[in-house]
Image (tube, rainbow, N blue to C red; front, side, top):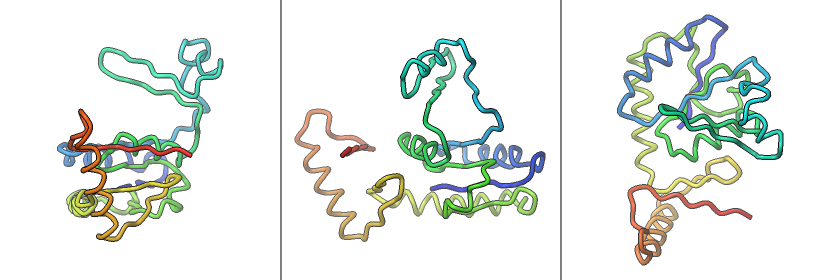
Length: 177
């Protein structure tokens, strides 16, 4: 599930997201924020040099965080990357192109009832979590009816149960062509 927070600079987008994140502390949330900077990684740093040399991405692991620098760009690529971490919610902040996302857009300048926003988000998260199978093809969710969803779920679970380590709470399968 994706929601987008829009508003002018200094309109309270970050504060709204912080309040919402505190209320949603029991859920796995990813926030995607735009930046006016052309690059965040610094020229001359190892991570920068790896990408300049041809790596698609470089990851630096510190004591308390992991940072990924990618040569991919754009909101669609960021959302596809975020989905691979299987979050309950993706919050997008600061993009002009959020209208194209076909998601709930919250205007930080107009909507400040955090409890109302929280209730709406929780309702959508619960509805989304009821799905046993979610399939994305080229970044777009493929709608499944109940029969097809159940067929994918039971068939996949049965096949994986025959493999050592094939049982788990969340299973991610990637198929590339």
